Length: 167
Length: 239
Image (cartoon, rainbow over all chains, first blue to last red; front, side, top):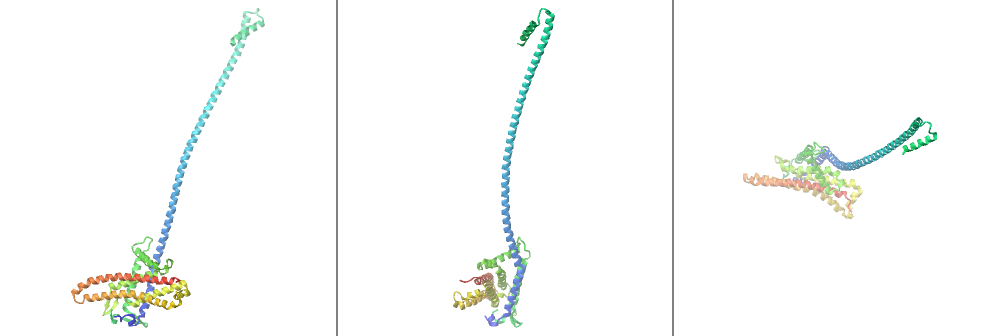
């Protein structure tokens, strides 16, 4: 039953060559048709996955950075708002103080002016009255007691009279 | 299959050819090529169904090689392992499903049920191992490996190469040949005494076919694994 084996029937050397050549041919065909594209694609896929992982890591970091920035901006704006309110308050206070002081000085000066005016008026009135009275009294006195009164007596009389007016 | 007249031989260019081996070998080669060709048509970044199968097979055979060959050396042998596994697998299973005999002579059967075919692949593997050893270590270092651990080890080293060649080729031949032989015997039994023996033989035949299919897959796997082991032996410097 073993008589058909290679050793028994004479070596079928042709078969060896046939299988060797066919196998090399098959290997070559598979390399062209499948092996190269498949390995290329597997390599590409591995590259893509590692790229994707890197990109994901990067975008995660970016997102964290953005969130941090937003947080900072928010805190900043809150601080800014409070400082704006503060400065506005301060400015208002200052303005109020200024206006008040201005008003006070204005009022003071008005009062002073008025006082001065009144004094002036009084002085004017007094002097005019003095003159008028002097003239009038001279006129009246000259009319009433024309001869009896000397000039000195008359002046003394007028002065005493005016003094009485001043009080 | 048993007697010498069961295979047709012919002479061509002074060489003897075995018709059964040539025909069934061609069928196996064409089947493997069509299988790979059909699955590799639409290769995309997102693998489709066929591409997934093919990529799984590539990963599988690469995994076998990586088991023994150091990681960065696998690349060059990946294609050899892939083709070898597919061809041996298809060859082993071929005879389980199709056996054509015309006029008492086989024409289609498992190519691997003939030792000349398995020995061819065994020689191919060992030649590749020698080549890889020389390519990596250089002539001197490679052949000085035969003198280790000491000079008188040389005959044993050479004998080891010879037994590697024989066992690698004969293991797969033996399993596939005996599997087909038993299938034939059960088949003969089925037709020997009419309906009664057929009823007994059919489940037996089915059982043995399934077992042989399993054995065929195992043998293809073992052959590639041992190829990787022999190649890796030649890649390492023995201390």
